Image (cartoon, rainbow, N blue to C red):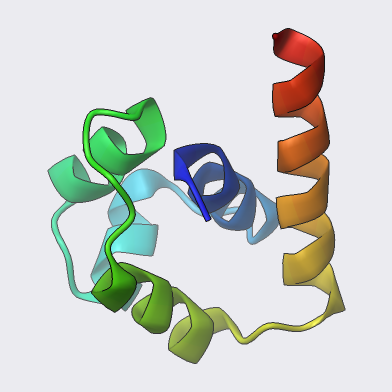
Length: 74
């Protein structure tokens, strides 16, 4: 999972960075840094995302779409 995938999960849930950060118990600046690629997605953040949002079909689809769009942008 990278910053693009984190952003895709957040957007798929219709959340702002602030709301997403609150649910994950991290700062908004942490989410902004991860999404912009200035900070890697830590194992702890991956676990928090999985615990908060699960690994259901909608999450998997959002991550897959993010990966595909990232390939197209290159």
